[in-house]
Image (cartoon, rainbow, N blue to C red):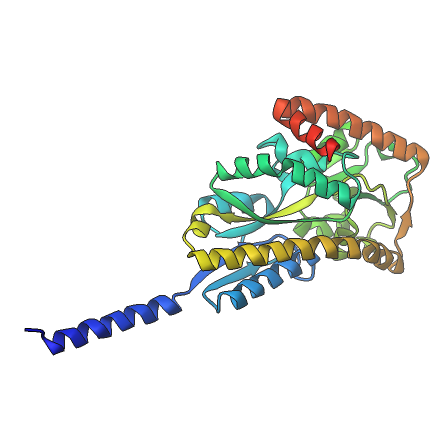
Length: 326
């Protein structure tokens, strides 16, 4: 005989389980090394809001800006180990792990946004495979502005940079220092303002946005718009954390990531000229490099391209060949 009391209890528990499942919330921490006002961080913050809205609050992503959760060199490892579910890295910072990461930091290989997009598309399959082996998935990738030289003194050729205290934030920028005879000093962006204020560095290569965010114009007055390369940031997620999501939430994250990537590339291009204008308004002399400086730097780039191809082997050659055919 059916027990109406038992049936009522089962029904109640089923309803409770459904209610808990429907309102279960997953929380991710996303580690970021840049100021909250930087366009990369703003774009990521919008991505987190889009995911929240698309999932009805089921997945909450907290963005920890300005290296407040992990310092820049620690972020990739934190995501890989699951200490943070997600994080943003500058790909070129990890060149010592694998040459593939260094590709967009090779000077004068890709100097325009369309070229940078083609280079990333050519390298993406190899990048995805490399990161998947480390338990990491790429959510989206956004470029910086083309890289130029900030210098306390005027620079007409590479000879003028010999012996200068040069900020190195990646293996590529350290290699440039070596090739031009500068003194490399390892400084991450969160420490850059203090390094300039105390004279630890006198020069560095980076984008207009970095110069503006760190108020470089208060310490250094020359910016040479060399447009040497266009580095990219990748927003990574721990593969296990992503795989633990249900299909609907995964789709929402993928859609928000695709939107963030498209938005980020558009904003990067729009802000490139804006940042140079803002630097000029604050006393920075924004200069076109002299023909001699340009030629010297392209020679450095050619040397680094040869070195990269040697390090990357057949896989690297295949990527560059694919890029050049696109």
